[in-house]
Length: 262
Image (cartoon, rainbow, N blue to C red; front, side):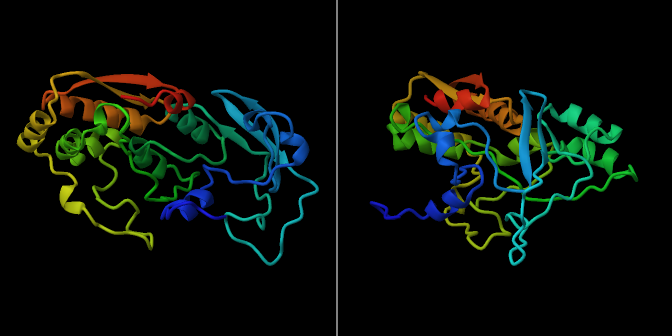
C-alpha cells in the first residue's frame, strides 16, 4: 500500500480488530454493500444466530484445521476450547454478571468495576484482570465552531480528569497523558503539560479570545458503552462552569458515527 502522506497510525489502524481489514469470500460481497455481506469467520467457530441486544451464538467449525506452527492468542492457530458452543451476550452489564454467576455464561468480559469484589469472592469463578483496556476520547468537528484553535484550547484547559475517571469507571483506572498505554512500546508523554490542566481561569480567558458568545455546542455520545456516556456527562458539567452551552445528544453506537457534529 502506498499512502499519499505519512501516517503514523496506519499500521496500528489496519492491525486493529475493530477495523476488520479481513479477507471475505467473493460471493459474499460481490454486487452488494459490504455491510450486507453477512458474518464470515476464518477461525474455529462458525456463525449460528444473532438476536440483537441478547446474544450472538457460534458453533464449532468441524472442518477447521489449525496451523501447527502459529499458535498466538489472536491467530488462526487456536482450537475451540469451550465445552459448549459460544454464546456471546450483548446484554447490559448487570445481566452479564448475573449470567456468569448462574452458569448461563462460561466467560464474560467488560465486567463493571463495582462487581469485581463480589465476583472475586466466588470460588466457582476465575477473575483475570486484563488492563488497561481503553480510554475515553473527545473528538472535535473541525468544520464547525471548533475551527477555532482558541476554542479547542479552552476545552482542553478545563477538564478535571480525576473527576471524569471517578465517575466513568468508579475510579478504577489511572490518569495518563499518553495516547498509548505505558505497557506499549509507543508510549510517550509528549504534550503532557497540557493534559489535566483543570484551569477554569485559563479556559474562560481562551473562550473570550475565541469570541465565543454562548452558542450551543452539541456533544454526541452513546449508552452502548457506559463509561463513555458517564464521561460525557461529567465533561458537559465541567464545560458549563466556564460558560459553554453544551448539549448532549445520545445515540446508539452506529448512530453516533453518523451524527458526529458540533
